Length: 134
Image 1 (tube, rainbow, N blue to C red):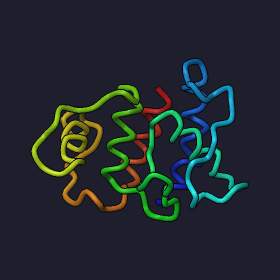
Image 2 (cartoon, rainbow, N blue to C red):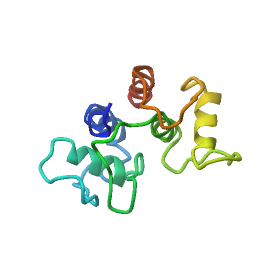
Image 3 (cartoon, helix red, strand yellow):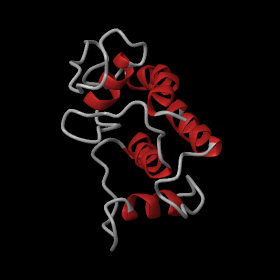
Image 4 (spheres, rainbow, N blue to C red):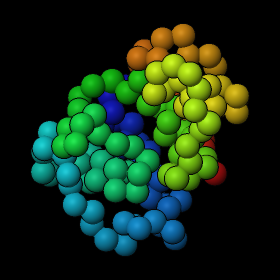
């Protein structure tokens, strides 16, 4: 699943859940990614989730909306959706994503991630949607 498709699906749920407490729900956040064309259906979704801290780009001004969303990226969004955007898991040894994946597994949000850069599974996305709807 591409990052832009996930955002299109999740933003409606995320916007409804965050409307009472979101910093951007009542306004129009500014797009900060140069690779997100103006007027795209999913462009506003990217602006909202990045402004509120649920997803970040792959660089200071790059979001890479055409790339598949990885299981690691879904783990990060799941934990931020569950615990808030200020949440940071206890640091584990290893790569930047190790602590995020370990925490998502420990909380039962996803099964072991053998290849962190593998595309997210349908089960991963279904779990994320369920968390956003809570």
